[in-house]
Length: 381
Image 1 (cartoon, rainbow, N blue to C red):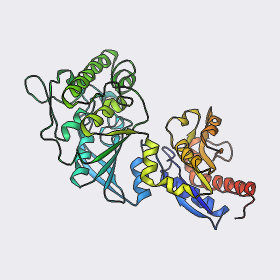
Image 2 (image 1 turned 120 degrees about the horizontal axis):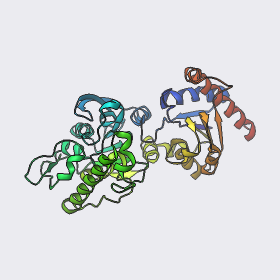
Image 3 (image 1 turned 120 degrees about the vertical axis):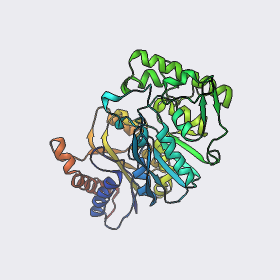
Image 4 (image 1 turned 180 degrees about the vertical axis):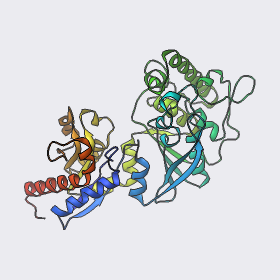
C-alpha cells in the first residue's frame, strides 16, 4: 500500500520538505506497514528551488549577482539530481523583497541578476532550466536578463541602453551576435500562472507596476516602453510577445524569456510535478496527502494542492488536503479532485502557537486522516 505525501510549504512556517516529513511521521503512526513516498512540492513561486532540490537529491549553488537596483546580492539556485537541470527563482536575484519600500522604482529596476543566474547555470553545462518568475521588483520586459546573456539593446545612436524598463522607450536595435552559445540548445521552461499580456490595461505595467512603486504616470511610461520592446522584438527577432498570455508576468519577464531565451510558459505546479516525478509516484498509490498553509476558493488558480489532485484524479486515487487554515470557498476544491480537506489546528489558538507547533499538528492531523481513511476503506494498518 503506497501513500504519497506531496505538500507545498506552509509559508513563513515550514518548508515543503519539513511539512512532508511531519505528515509522513503521522502516516507512519496510522499505517506502519505502508510504503510512504514523500514528494515535496511547490507551484513555481517561493520554495520551488528547495522543493525540487529536496525531491531530486540535488544541490544548491550560491552566486553573486546584481540585485534589482544594481546593488550586489548573493542569490542561490538549484542543480537537480540529474546534474543536467537547473531551477531558478527570479525573486532570488530580482525580487521585490530585495528592495526596501522607499527605494522601489520599476523604471530603473533590472532583471540582470536573473540573467546572471541563468548564465552561471549555462556555464555549468546544464541542458534544461526551470525558472519561477513570481515576486519581481522589475518592469523591464527581461531586458536586463537579455543583456546579462550577451544581447546588446541599443538606441538609435548605437549606445547600450541603461538598466530599467523606462529606457526601453529608446530601443532601436537588438544585437544577438554575442548571445551565450549554450542558450539556444538549452530548454527553458517558465513557471507562469498568470495570463496577463505584456501591454495594455491588463498588462504588466498597469496591473503590477503600482505594487512595485509605479505612480500612474510611471505606469503609463512603462507600458509604452514595453510596447516599444514588443515592436522591436517582433521586427528583429520574429517573435510576437505583445498579447501572449503570461507575457506580462514578472514585469514582462515572461515575454523576455520567450523572446530572448526561447522559453516555454507553463503551469508552475505542472512543471514542478514533472521534475519531481509526481505522476509516476501517484500512479500506483492508494492515497495522496497534500496541503499548504491556507486553502480557500483561490487555491484552484495554480496552487499546489489542486495541481496534485488533478494528477491523482487521472488514476482514481483519493486525495486528502491538510492546511493551517480553511478559508472561504475551500469546499469548491472538491470539484477539482480533493476528496477531503482538514485544518491541522486541533482547537482555537493564536497564529504564533500554530506556527510553533506546526510539526506536531501536521503529524496528528495526518494520523487522524489516515486512520479515518483506513476505516472507511475497510483496510488494516
